[in-house]
Length: 335
Image 1: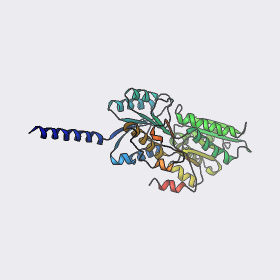
Image 2 (image 1 turned 135 degrees about the horizontal axis):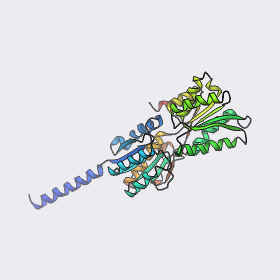
Image 3 (image 1 turned 120 degrees about the vertical axis):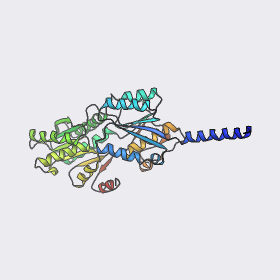
Image 4 (image 1 turned 60 degrees about the horizontal axis):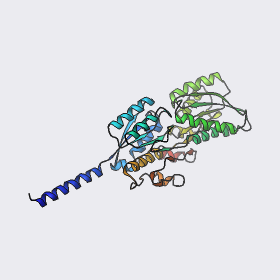
């Protein structure tokens, strides 16, 4: 083989290697705090529907944190050791999961925080909804129905896992709405965690209905699953759900059906917006400023959500109050 042919062959091999490298998919580890809740399942579903994932430009590896911050930290270590290009984390704990960001930064792997929050600014970015606002909106829906400025009312608050950003921030929003009713207008009879679980919320509410017989007017569930557990307890006690003011957060399918039945209010947290926005931001962090977002959520929320080159630290996905008018449309979008 002459020198010219060798040179051409070498060049072709080099270009082929470069093309293969350019075509290699971006490996994104997605650390979910736990996979039992429908909202997390929706995030997984919408993540797989991201255009870059469907085209093979990105590959997602999902981890189930099993509602344990230490498990998530271990899974992050695995993602780092297996050379993930980026990490998306839905953290269990506001403080304990900061190690994920610290260790990924040392390995020069970008981290995008989604859904829940971490008490650090060291992450690449966060794509979340404002939980304090969500907590305010749900509590205000309950208190407006009870007309708390005119009537003295009693409510119970079913909290998320203690120490998680959802419990902390939504709790602040709950308190803000209660304060707006005026001093002495709202009495919080009980305030305990049910760990985002419908199964845990039901017996909790059953106990409260016995303990405070005939006194509970409203239920503020810091997520829909727990609000739905409270509804099951009320029905199980032979009481009329519509005699209570009940609200939750997330917009899970059962809650939307409950809204249609006039049993509760739900503040929808956009699972698609959070996970697909996170994937776009993660891809921008890996691929550089030539990357353009591929999810349609940037057009959907164009008024309130700006891409700004994909380099912002904080992206906030807007909330949507589920109503009788928009409920069926929201359900149809999940089919």
